[in-house]
Length: 287
Ligand code: 13P
Image (cartoon, rainbow, N blue to C red; front, side, top):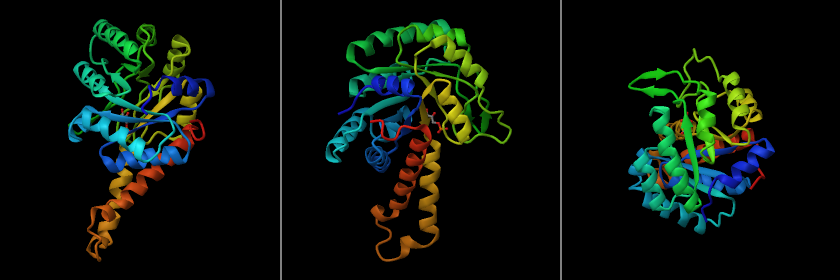
């Protein structure tokens, strides 16, 4: 059964650990993440971007696959199926498709419009028992080959959005999606501390979990981060493992071309990455 992310994040905030959101791309990804969460008795959030949803033949296909897998694999740890960086329209499509959690990314709107749209979604999600993540201060990342540095959110705007009754809040603190450039100045703990003080008990979300040094992750958790998103790191681990398999010529030996064999090292690499993150985030045994 899918659950809202609310309870797992309230517990994480109170227990000073974080729950990982791992983005999924296909069946292998989903299975690897669910099995690792179950093995480690950890709550987990499966993230789906609009692009990944489209790739997997739509949000309905994703919901049905995840629900069936939870059933078939006898997954008993709490699993939330969450829309990552949703548009306003995308949020409604996921609600209809049966997601248990959504993110509305209104960070590119003027704050008044972000507030209006978030408010509307707070009402809809409350009615349906879904968790809702909002965002203030755009998260940087690579776009057309240019890596934008992450913005730092205004703590007062964070409070304004948090007070609308969202479940969790993503606030820019200098974090970016994808690999961090060599000249990245690091997370702004000053901004994080100021936001934390303003929003009180609201679980905070750290996007761009790939490549943030472990000590910064631990410090962010100590300052109120309860959900950490990881996407690129699983992709890099998967690609490196499959590349190694092919470079060693294993696809040319016997039935090594069988996709179940060809993709197996990639799956193992995702599992190892998820395990490592769950250890670092402190969510093991917290299901
Ligand atoms: P990374 O791809 O940098 O891990 O970021 C993931 C993320 O924040 C998804 O919203």
